Image 1 (cartoon, rainbow over the protein chains, first blue to last red):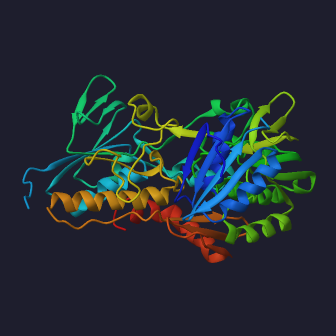
Image 2 (image 1 turned 30 degrees about the vertical axis):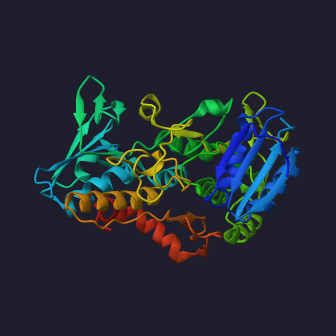
Image 3 (image 1 turned 135 degrees about the vertical axis):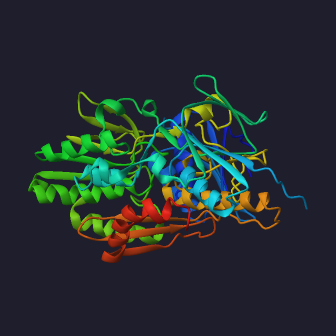
Length: 80
Length: 383
């Protein structure tokens, strides 16, 4: 577990593809370097989608975990 | 259980398809028990999916508009006016000019508004088809296009009709082929996501069709700003593309009245119960269609099903019946692909992988049929 606190939280539980990633990108548009974005999602595809997005955009995936069917991603914004 | 004897006052703000279907369905279900009024600032109703066909010269204004008053059943009162303020706590609505309305039930069906400011350079540089005038302008640009770089795709991330950018990419390809300039044209389709068409099951079919038609997908391209002087669109990922013609989805937000009344989120979308559509915290106010903050696509079909749900539940409540129906997040989008075929995307709250239907002539004919039955079967609130 990590004790990094998010500065922006997105609750995308119950939203199907591409909702969670779209919400992340919308938050990213308004974010600045140093922000930590937390995304909660239940869409199983979000795990691979967010990994690919972070890699492609050059931001940092602090953690990606799943518990009780809820995926929690913590992303540090470094590429704005 | 008590049954009201006085007619209930149902006030509907917005006469798009959600507001219209709801009004007509409600007076059909409980004709003597309701007084229904619809307020809209325009007396003309637009069939918005028709803008796509306007953009490629296949529809004109008269094909996709009707005078609003002709679309309502006799018992629905239509008022042309602009709502300035919604006060949910006092159950009051104020119109421009100072007139006020009270209600027993309120339905907010105020749709969405274009928000060009979100992307610098958008207004000056981009052609699109999210209004009739813009669709006409796009048609003229396509008619005059002599070849070059066409960049098409997703610009604003919240926009009406998720499949529309893909539809215009396919139709522009076909249009330019017919005009004989396609060989001199390079088409790139931009998307901020990993797949140009996000739902996984239909994605493969869409990518194959794009490849076959020479439309190059450019993924992870989140439009950040546009430089109209240099004719260049730049992404948040640090890439840029030159264009001669740029067709992108405009960013949308909720209606001004929602924002001014403080009942929306930071983009002006109204938080509602996902099954019953009541505005959170209220049992006498509902929102339907684009106006809601639900994660459903902003499309007419969603507005239609939501309007039916709310109309039926208001009718049950007025009749003193305990029965209720639930909205299941259902959407069904016909995707026009040119060459006489269309495909379709189905989704609801429950499918993890939303199914799609492969391209066929039948679905294209269904799309054309919808352009007509919208005015009769759909808006009447019968189905």
